[in-house]
Image 1 (tube, rainbow, N blue to C red):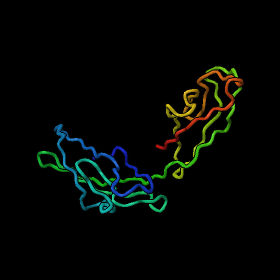
Image 2: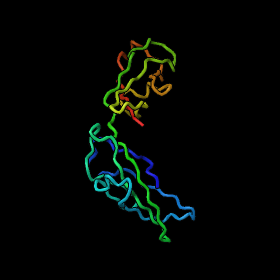
Image 3: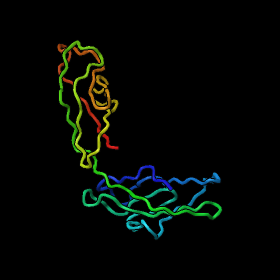
Image 4: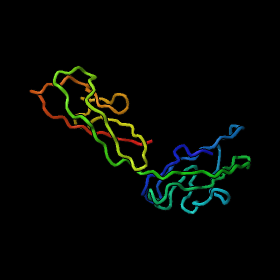
Length: 173
């Protein structure tokens, strides 16, 4: 039994999908039923429910008050054979801030010039990955380089345009 995304964002609403549950059967069966069951690792079963192969949260967990929750899931294949496993789900706070240490570039600098480095604030201490969502303000004029650096994706002319606005998304693991 696997939870491919064993995290819940802090404050996630009751009834929200946590993730799909996955199971592997040596006989190549793909027809499974899942249920929460009592046993080792079932501490927070009452705070969840399963519909088909999806795990949903029925309580609101707030980090850092709650850092981890525990469920025990049973999977049964079409032949009636079953397996149970206790699983840990981490409570995750989303990033709260992104800064860019340098926010200017010389005009006529070549495409690919590094402008500055992004730093993100994440309450869990996670390292963020950064993206520039397409279709947002002046994002097409820039690129992310090396995972956390803002680079030019155009040659800039001060007399044509002086200020560019971008939207940056910081995502934790």
